[in-house]
Length: 383
Image 1 (cartoon, rainbow, N blue to C red):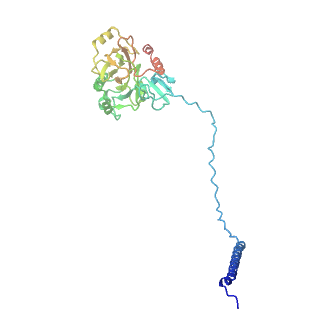
Image 2: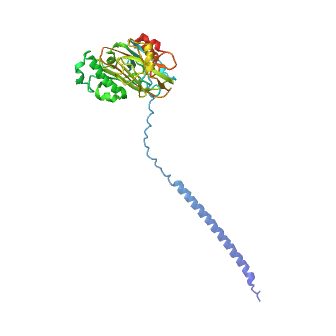
Image 3: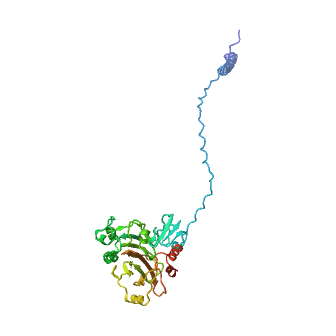
């Protein structure tokens, strides 16, 4: 009789055998996977090694222009001669007292080299620099602060320079002396009442050259000096002529003053629109001014004659001046019949002894030299 079959005992070897087979398969598969993976990596590496390196094309080379060279420094040149030193600015408290170097001087004219034109306020130097400054007895040839502008009129010609028909009968020469006096008297008496120079401009011929007066010292001499000074010699005959000056100045001192002067033939002065002196040869013929009785009496008791004029001088009316205040001055000087001519104008202060040359600006050294040389009488009236 046989031993009975046990299912559990028979299944154990079988199951153990199956487990060993499965493990073997897993191991083999794992090895294959690793081998295949290694082969794959080796193939990739081989391909990378065998594949040629890519070639890169360099960009085209563009030729660059070099930058322009910097400009050369400006050439330096050596001066052929040493330059003159730069003039120093003129700084003075009162420029009108400044001296200007004189070059040439004579009795009738003073030429100043390297002078200046003057303008602006009192004591200021302005305007263009002039090559020379000409001084005559009738004024400077350039305006300066305080000077009065002077024009020479010819009562024998109309404004166009044509001879007037009503004067042809007594010019040229001294014929018709009385007629000339009456003719000039009518013109000047009207003019000195209002000093309208435009009225003379419309009626009579005038000089192209203007002069600028500050003082009026014209020693007695030939009447031809007037046209010569105004550069109208040969154009304006020295008879029936009138030099009219107008302008303003600022006095350097306050006080009460009066003028003193004489003329051959006409000298009339207005201060701030009022006639203060008529020192003409013929009184009351060329203005409507009347001398004060006290002044007339003093002149008669102590007659004074200067600058070659024989008739005694005339004292004017008193008037007030204020330092620094603009003061209007109008002066007319005229020669009627022709021949000799002269005029002078002085000033005196109330309560102060002596007289001085009337001037609308302080006298420079050249002015003083010119006046002293023009006539010996000038020295006693210059400070």
